[in-house]
Length: 362
Image (tube, rainbow, N blue to C red; front, side, top):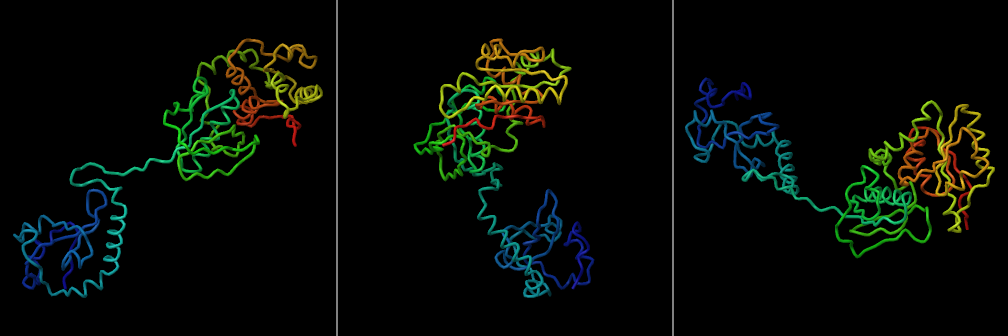
């Protein structure tokens, strides 16, 4: 046999210098098969026999060898002293690999560009969509948005959220979905704040308040950012307390009387938690946000130079943004205070205190 001197050497030219040149008759130039990795071949090898015998689907003729031999691609057959059976044995692994590659290419042909037109013909299957219409106020809407996005992600679906007003206050919630709602719908059931393992195999509308953090994606608090105008108003409100340790307190006083499943904390809750922070942080500054600021301002436990009740007429999102900028957070009842803590003190590693008898359990 003879040894080929390198992949960039023209075989046809090199054979002229070989003592075996008279043993080779060029009766066809099916030429060279090359595995392309980028623009240059990784390897070039001489193949014998038909394309079917070689187990390959593409032939590339080495231009220099073709020109030197003076034959066209399909002119004749090659005859050499090397036996085809020997070549098959020596290259059986390569043939098997090539055939497996052909099978894979056939199965995945939709993912390859059309070489003839130069246009990519990638077939994309439209993902399933999970639809939800936001209901309730700010805290409820945040739970529904974050839960819908998380449930959709776990099911390989695209979230389709509409309604509500989150886009007025937050970056990252995306544009409102305008697609047609499907007929198939699924409800979370009659109980609030429960976690269900939703599994979907088609487009569906998801109903409910979805008040369970277990639905969330891990980075949801990073995706939800107040719009700059909201952040600016919150920063302006707190600028006089820059040297203090700020403790936000959310007081949901009015709405708790409208439902039967919530308990409002007793006075002792506020007295004890504020005394604790005053001992731990001598320069503590309490910032009170409430749905009933008049009631809050008249409470004895909220009297003092280190307490500031928000009485300004803000959008609820501004009050929430103020609370999220506080270093620590105290919750009473409701989803508003929960989100203020989750996006603020909790996300930054501050202290969060909650009322553990909030719900009336059956």
